[in-house]
Amino acid sequence: MSRRERAESELTLTERARRQQLIEATVELVADRGYAGASLSRIAERAGITKAAVLYHFPSKDAVVRAAHEHALTALTSQVAAAVEAADPAHGPAAYIRSMVGHLREHPRHTRMIIEAMTNESAERQPAERWRPLAQIIEAARSERTPKAAGDERTLAIIIGGGIDAIVAEQLNDPSYDTAEAAEELIDLVQTKLSA
Image: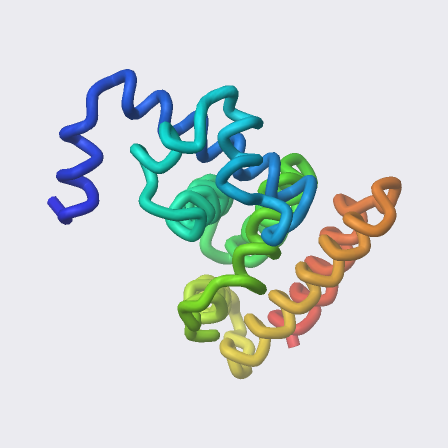
């Protein structure tokens, strides 16, 4: 058990509920006002508590924003992982694309939270953290095909990630944009590449 998990397990039920309330208030506030507009005072106001109470649970604005970002990412990755695991390996890339685009469509505040946190966080993320899991899904899909298509899983994973980003960005700019149909178009392109 990690230090963080141990610290979380030592919290009372009330403390866990309050932390969750603060995380949800932060997701809403960052989605509505951006990172710069999410001060500790505004987080406290949105949650209906005092700033001192926020500081009791999180040592800084960055800490509560980081927790909110982790919450949004965990929800996203859990849904995507479940969809990919439920799919036949040959259909893993399609399950990945559908579930990723679907989750981000259904949770626009999570989408904005993730974008804001990524553009404002001081810790650098390695690009491989994003493309490597998808490259493994693509590799598994290729190994299921007969004849096996040759290709660069890394590059295809990066292209898919860029396509998903573009679809989600378009939907944020135009809420009427049909992301489900766009996801299917991206899947068709990927299936063509995997079959080549």
